[in-house]
Amino acid sequence: MSRILLISPSFFGYRQRVSEELNRQGYDVECVDDRPHEDVTFKSLAKISYKLVDASIDQYATFIAKKVAEGHFNQVIYLGGMSFCWTRKQFERIRNASDARFTAYLWDSIANCQRFATSMDMFDRVLSFEPKDCAAYGLELRPLFYSGAYRGLPLEPEDGFEWDACFIGSVHQPSKFHSVLDISRSLKNRGLRVFTWFYMPSRSVAHLRCLTDPVYRGVDFRFDSLSTAEVANVYRRSKCIIDSPQEGQFGLTMRTLETVGARRKLITANQDVANYDFHDGGDVLIWQNESSLTDSFFSKPYQPLAEEIYESYSIAEFVRTLLDVNHVYHGYARKENR
Image (cartoon, rainbow, N blue to C red; front, side, top):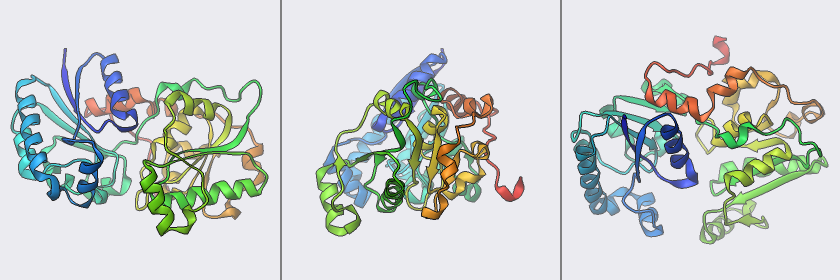
């Protein structure tokens, strides 16, 4: 059985889902974090500069290199981005510990990664969710995925939709929150029913945002995250899902792919969505301002896409693309090239 070392942060369960799918496809997987610590102190210092915690990072590089050397892994897969903490010299230790194939997948733009770019050439293959990085650095585009919890939702619940639109997600990044709040309030002003779960990683972050940005004031924030099953249940009862990317990023969020899998309409502030194959069905509204919204968007029923489009964004296809250099994603094309 082929052995894989999966190096990735554990947040939001992404690593766990990928690991489980790798197991399902017949691989023996071992998971490790991509940073030595996940406590608040380490994260706070690392956000300022990884140089402040380099002693701990250096020790961790030695630990990972030993694991790679002794683990008899056929492949080492890195999933992440801004949490990649090693200097080039530190990562060389890890890379030179084995002749395993090294693959990286980035779910952050390179501009938001302090250290990954200096080690990028040491990977045999690098994939990214970000189209502009793929064009600039010659990387392979591969959007994220949706898990099976979303694929089985009915097109419409038997008792009808409880919500016209919903948003569930983190909002500590200001430009993203501004867009989501603008969309949510505009829909409510039209008399539409909107469910929101504005997640904040901590009360201190929420307090800081309220002090520095008046848009955050008076908003009901949540400090506990919903499970996948709970999110899927809200999606089941919602006609449409609201989304906005992080500032400076155009790659598809996990929320966008969950919307595809759940067969729900999408309102997004991400202009680049127009270049993806699922956009052409007419159930995606690209938000610029309140005039973007038409009454027919909510009144017309959702039109299912071709089955191969749904399959291409599944976690099973995501994993196959990571493992096989010949398994390539084909769902993106700039409009001017179509």
